[in-house]
Amino acid sequence: MKRTSLIALRMTVLSVLVLGVAYPLAVTGIARLAFPQVSAGSLVKRDGAVVGSALIGQAFVSDRYFHSRPSAAGSGYDALASSASNLAPTSQQLIDDVQRRVDAVVSTEMGARRGDVPVDLVTSSGSGLDPDISPDSAMLQVQRVSRARGLDVDVVRDLVRSHVSERQLGFLGERRVNVLELNLALDALSSR
Image (cartoon, rainbow, N blue to C red):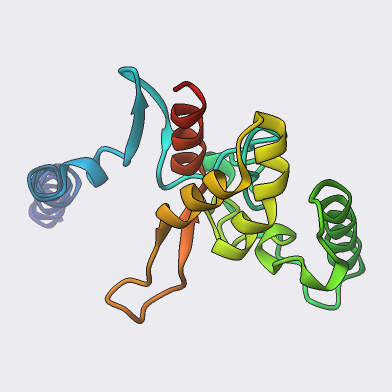
């Protein structure tokens, strides 16, 4: 029995060292070499300071900024509480939440009509952390943002168009606009 216990103990220690230490260090090292930006969290910097991540959404509430999708992650874009709402399409709470958000969009966005509000502006993503909105959602917000900043509507519309990312490989996913990057470009444009 003593011999069997020592073999089991050695295998446990070896497994912990190989699978718990060596393997994660090797994978992290390879990722750092092959994909340095992504493996570091896709951090976005402005004037040398980190202002966010291109992979995690943020709440922008000022009329001077494009607004993100709603978040279901904790108190809002909390990466430690990433999750969907898990509300079924027939859930009265989901229906009420979406209706409340549609009303808010219609009241804030000039020219927005109830049936034209893009779904991504009134529903959270599966993770609750989506950093992107659809080009339609961004275009719907152009009037409000240009008015709040005193910029020409066509200038802001062109800025949105220049920040549209196409589908990956031409067919994977949807066209999208990263809200943080768009808002940073908007700040740079306004400071000129």
